[in-house]
Image (cartoon, rainbow, N blue to C red; front, side):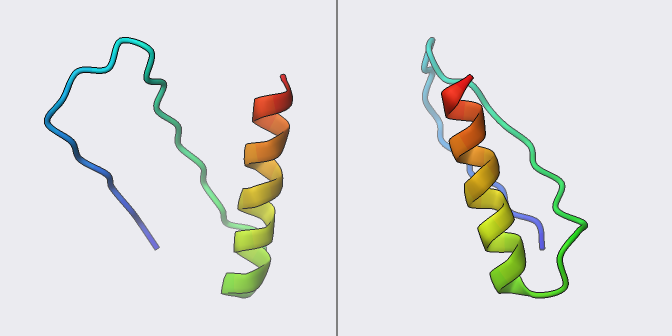
Length: 44
């Protein structure tokens, strides 16, 4: 699955991200892995 978010606006404090989820065999597994990655990134 690939997703893009487009917005015609400038946000000086915006930081984009790319996550490549190739591990996991189901949508549920990949969603769980993505959530854990987001939480871990926010903690750093």
